[in-house]
Length: 109
Figure 1 (cartoon, helix red, strand yellow):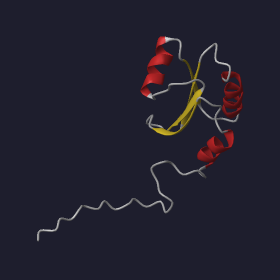
Figure 2 (cartoon, helix red, strand yellow):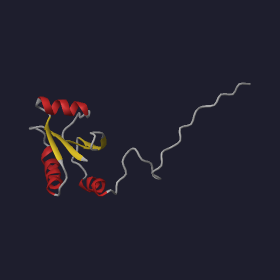
Figure 3 (cartoon, helix red, strand yellow):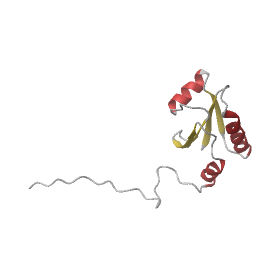
Figure 4 (cartoon, rainbow, N blue to C red):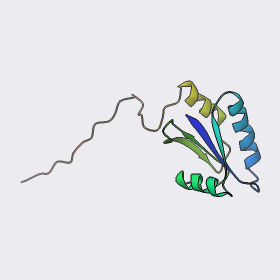
């Protein structure tokens, strides 16, 4: 897992978000930074549908989004839970089992 952080120069809410992310990075979490005012940052932000800065997207090793904080500073405690294995991803339910797919029945009276 890693964090992708999207900011821009004139963003008034970006400094607190950068501070939190820097602390997470210092603790060993992999972080990629993107400036949404340059082409690479804009392209990456577009891929993750980033519409506001700051935005922080937590992705798995294949790049699939696990969680995100858009337009706000990220929740450091929640991010630490993910990295410690305590937080559930969006794909698993409470029991950790996959739900059965039910097919609709038709009444042929």
